[in-house]
Length: 282
Image: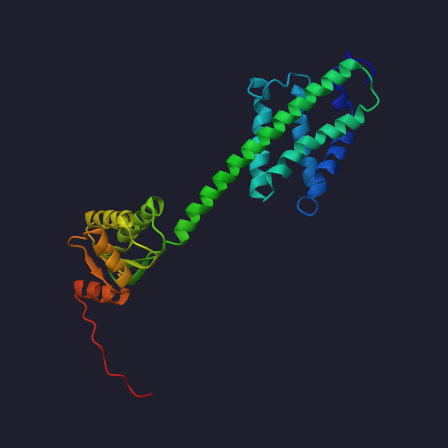
C-alpha cells in the first residue's frame, strides 16, 4: 500500500492468507496444546471475514448496526472459549494479536494517511477486545449459574424408602434457592410415586436458624397441599436447643430425632408395624 487513498480493508483482503497465518501464530503462543492450529485459523479466519466490512470505519463505538454481526460473532466466540476453559485474557489477546500482524505488514510505510487508518483500526481492535472480555464474563456467570443449578439437583436426592414413603436427605446449608429445589423435587416425587408420606431429614444440615425453619415449614405446607403428611427428622440435641432458644414453633408437624424413627412413624401411618425378631444363630 503506497498511497493513503486506498482503503485499509483492501490491504487486509489482499494479504488475507498471510495475515491470518501470522495472526494465528501470534495468538496461539499462549494456547499451545489447548487448541489446534487448524481450529484457531478457522476461528480467526471467520472473525477476519466479519471484521473486513468495518475495517475502514470509525472506532468511536461498537453499538451501531454495522457492527452487529461482528458483536454477535465475538459473543459466540467468547462463550465457546469460556466453556472450553480459556481465561478472559487469553480470549481477548486473540483479538489484540491482529494488531501486531497488521503493523508488521505496514512496517516501513511512512504515509501519514496509512498511519491514521492504522490508529483508527487499532482503536477498533481495542474496543473488540474489551467486548470479548465483557461477553466472556457474562458467559462465565451463566456457566456458573448452570453448574450451581445442577449441583443443587445432585445434592437434593429424593429416595423412595417404602411403598408410599419417600425421603429427602439434606446435607449442608439451606437457602431460598435450594429450598425451592427441595420443594419442587419433593412435590414432583409425591405425584410420580403416589406417596402419602414424606420425610425431610436434616441430619446433615449444619445449622438451623429462623430462615431455615421457615423454609422447612413452607416445604411441609406445600406437601400437605398435595395430600401428603411430612415428618422432619434429624433433630439433634444441639439443633433442638437452638430451635427452642430461637422460639421457633413447628406447630403440629411431626419431628423425629433420627431417620429410622421417622421411617417407623411413616410405616405405622401406612399401616405397617415393624417388629424386632429374634436373631438366629449363624
